[in-house]
Amino acid sequence: MRNLRTSVLTAASFAALFVLITAVGPTAEQAKPSSTAAPTFTVDPSWPQEMPNHWIMGAVTAVFVDAKQHVWVAHLPETLTEEELYEEPWNVGAGVEAGKPKPVQLGTCCKAAPPILEFDPQGKLVQGWGQGSFTDFSDWPRDPHGLFVDHQDNVWVGSHSRHRVMKFTRNGKLLLQIGQYEKVGGSADTSLLGGPSGIWVDPKTNEAFISDGYRNRRIIVVDGATGKYLRHWGAYGHVPDDTEKFDPKMMMSGALPKQFSTPHGITGSKDGKIYVTDRRGNRVQVFDQQGKYLAEKVIASATLSSGSAFVPVLSPDAQQQWLYVADGTNHKVWILRRSDLEIVGEFGRGGRQLGQFLRPHGMAADSQGNLYVGEASTGRRVQKFTLVRR
Image 1: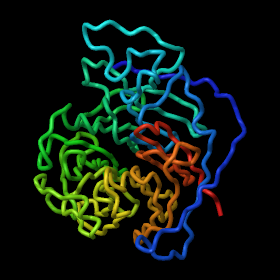
Image 2: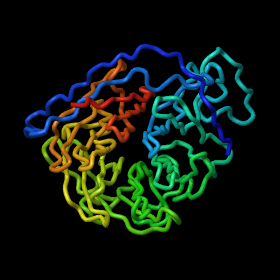
Image 3: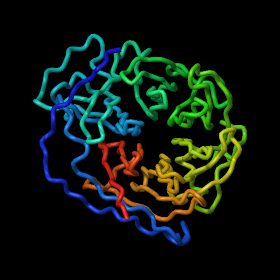
């Protein structure tokens, strides 16, 4: 694999302008009053710093904060257009087809950053890796989707359109692959994946929980060291059924799908619960680690298109009091009280200005409770939202 790493030049400093993002109260349909005020955040325009080499991001699919408080970002270089890559137009999409002439350089900027990026807490780029040859996909994560750095410092990367999850060293050396490139077998298959979208690894058991949901309709659990299949389950803890159909428009009248629609994000809590965001199902479902169904919360039930529940993130306090849910269709972040899953606030709105979102798709929290939100589609950025201390 062509491993791209770099030390970053210091970006020009500028005055930090902080814009208050207020947690807007929920509608009567969505929540009841909370005795504890919802968290509020300020957006930090100085984060991240400018990347070197004229690098820019494509659609951001995943964000994760590791134990060192470094922020990892997965993005899709193939989504960048020719006018964004005038400095290297031969790298647009999957590159130049065999037998065709290489395009000439059209301008002085820009270049696609490697798909996996690591930033330090101040937003300075530490390294980037993950781009390989378009004739050999064996050791690099094409179309990354889902990102997790585990307790052993391994970096897990999913690939929703290529149907595999890959485990790397911190510097991008491939250690393990689950599933096979562009091969699927359905939700009952114990060796192949079908559109893996999110990953969470339990530090106590080293079990890897994967939301396998762009094609399949399940959560699958494997051994984090060997990749050995352990178990899987569908919505409500039932056996997943890929044949069952559901019209999302029926949710507007209160109906809920019996199967997962798009299990898109996953995380685990300190008290042993698994939180799954079923994106097009407009809901969060909660399970124990064996797949026993515990609870459900519907969010913005009338949302069509891609749905309202993209990625779940738990607050880092001892009780993990808050559950944040990124919503890439309504372009906001929902704030839920974890104890009863009631919506107590929200922030963000659609737009390209500071603090606004265009398809928030990846999200993570650091140890101080600050949130990092990555935007897919044409958003193509990561914003830091600093927790306001009361």
